Image (cartoon, rainbow, N blue to C red; front, side):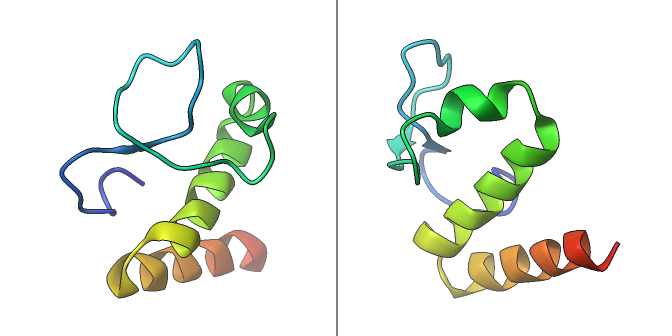
Length: 73
């Protein structure tokens, strides 16, 4: 989502093991960062969900479309 959400800093989930610094987004559940590390598809869906939560109108529209595409497959 970093190529879709336009901000000065990337949005990140707070994670001790994380390597990227940026604007913290509180995950929906505290184990989200750990669970998403091993599953790229889960990571993308959770990132899209966060775009709905913190994004502006443009980002929300893109996230909605991408989520719809996932479920249309």
